Each structure stands twice: as structure tokens, then as C-alpha cells.
Amino acid sequence: MPFQRIRNSDGLKNMLTIFGAIAQAAGGILLMDGVETWICAKRDDDIFRWILKACSAFDVQMLITTHSLETIVGYS
Image (cartoon, rainbow, N blue to C red; front, top):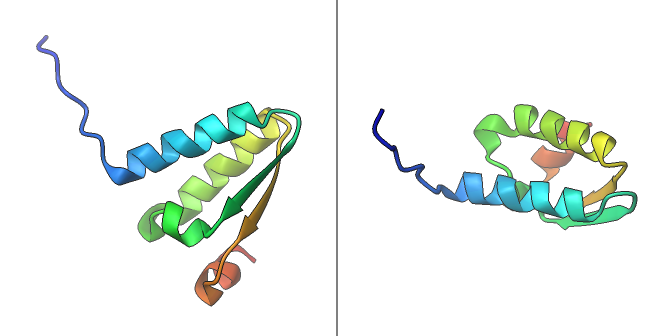
């Protein structure tokens, strides 16, 4: 089986950054500013559920800020 290179999209980089931040904040608080710039709008429901599961698994309380009314309404 030939080796296939994984393409490093901005979305993948963002998810790895978020996961790393959650892991580092284990047992504490994580602040995320401007969540609408980090999460792809097309997949935000799935990604947000994943983030909630990861925060629960690592016992992290995440505080999120946004300037986007659509983001606030969408996560309410």
C-alpha cells in the first residue's frame, strides 16, 4: 500500500490546535476568542459536539467569545 500524504488544510490545523489546547487545559479553563474564525461554518454542529465531548473528557470548562450573532443563535 503506497504512502499517501495527508493534506494540511486550515481546518485540520485549527482542529489540532483546539484539541491540543483542550488537552493542555485539562482540569482547568480554556478561553477561545472569535470562535467563528476557528470553526468551519459547514461543519460547525459536528465540530462543536466534538469539542464538548473533548472538554468533558479532559474536565475543561471552555469560555467562548464571538462577535457573530449567527454564531450565538446557532449555539443557543
